[in-house]
Image (cartoon, rainbow, N blue to C red; front, side):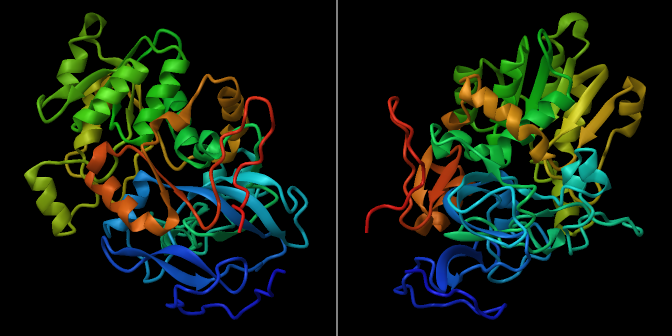
Length: 436
């Protein structure tokens, strides 16, 4: 029997952890309580708020590199008790009266971008620019009167304050546009990253114009950087340089994707090293900045950021501008905020560079990427190193943040769910509740 879960909005955290969490009045979720202070709390269940909402029972969720910006207290307007998580999937538990695209029992992956599907930008497949879903102000400093971009799950009140998916249940708005059905023949781990890091990497690499015979430099060997290497390899890139300072990540990328690794703790000018390995010392065809605003910058940049006189370190971006050939593309999936110290705009002009960047238009890429997964051309699950219960999420954040235990990617399984790997002979539904 499912208990009635309708309740007033804004209910406070429930502290008794012994309550039942099975679709009654309460559930377990990862919540924020200050910089590097997260814990799994008992909180009210989500409810249907709009006619095109669904309630999703989460079967798998992940900790993303951009979640670490929140965890470290680097993103403003994150409030006590906010639920994190924008990489998640599960089973549709309940649907609003206007939902027609999915039904109860469907197994779906949820894009981290919340898009309406019918505004000016959604109509041209720029879903991350959706004009209708974000009640926050967005992150633009010189905003003027333009509407903010799309709301994002679990990513501060700048982006709508929508509770995220590191929880047993989550409300999914705009459910006629977002939820993407996936076959039961593929495990959760194979398809989970369709929610963010795989399409983010795909957009980054295709924006960089990478194809057969191309050369590319990828700055950052985190999950998006690794997925970028996987996509570049599949697309036929001839040379893939990867710059990072964690030896275990570089070693994995070299072994798995055939990258040329460069450790910037040992080489203080990776761009020069890259250029010297390209024909005519021209530089690479495209670069991917998968680091973003928390790049390890100079002492000056560290001081400026501490004093809040600068929004982002520009070190990775300066390296990208230096490493790419004339007429090349700088593709930026890494998150940036505010303004940057030492942005080499004159160099970019002299080289005739193109910059492509921004949040990912996830919905656009999911069908094509699913085909690549089904054909085993992409195996995104290979980067997973840690599988944990949602109850251990705080430990997962610490491991991922500190790069302990050679952590590349953490997957969390809520409640009684289990990640099931399908048999070769039978079609298995992934994420069904364990027997109780």
